[in-house]
Image 1 (cartoon, helix red, strand yellow):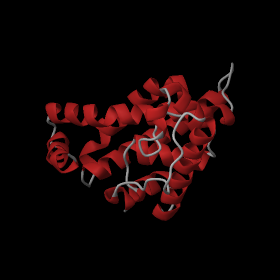
Image 2 (cartoon, rainbow, N blue to C red; image 1 turned 180 degrees about the vertical axis):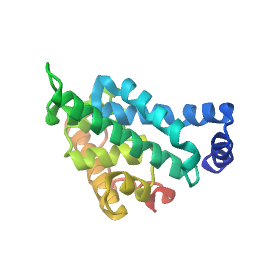
Image 3 (cartoon, rainbow, N blue to C red; image 1 turned 90 degrees about the vertical axis):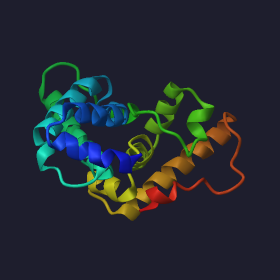
Length: 198
C-alpha cells in the first residue's frame, strides 16, 4: 500500500487536492491516536495544527510515503509538546506529566493484547508502561512506523526504539497473561514484521 501512495504524495506536493485528501485519510486516524496519547482530549486541536503545518510545508518534503508518515508524526509530536508547554503556562487546571502518560492511544501486542481487551483497557495498560516504551509502542504499532522513522521522531537510534517497543509489548503481553485476560504466550513475543525491523 505504501508504494501505491508515493505517487499520491507527489501529486499532493504538486497541489492536487484529491491526492492530499487521500493522504489525510490514510495518515490521520493513526496520527490522531498517537496525539491522543500525548495530549488526551486536545488531540483534535493538535491534529488540526499538525495538518496546517503539513499543508504549509508539504512542497518542501522529500521522501516516500513511509517517510511522510514519520514526518507527520514528528510534526505532530512537536505540536503536542508546544501544546503541553502552553497549557503549563496558562492559568487554570493543568495535566501532570504522569497523567499525560496515562492518556495513550490504542495499540496491540502483536495482535494479542488489543484483541483480548477493550480499547479503554488497552489505553490504561499502555499508560502504565514506562514513557519510552509507551511512545515506542505507539509509533511502531499505532502509527505503523519502522524503527528508523520512529527513531527520527524520538531522536533515538533504531535499535533503541525496537528494544523499547519489544519490551513494552512483552510487558503488556505478560500483564494480560497474569490477569487471565489473554492466553499466556507459549513462545517469545511475536516479532514485528520484517519491514518494520529496519
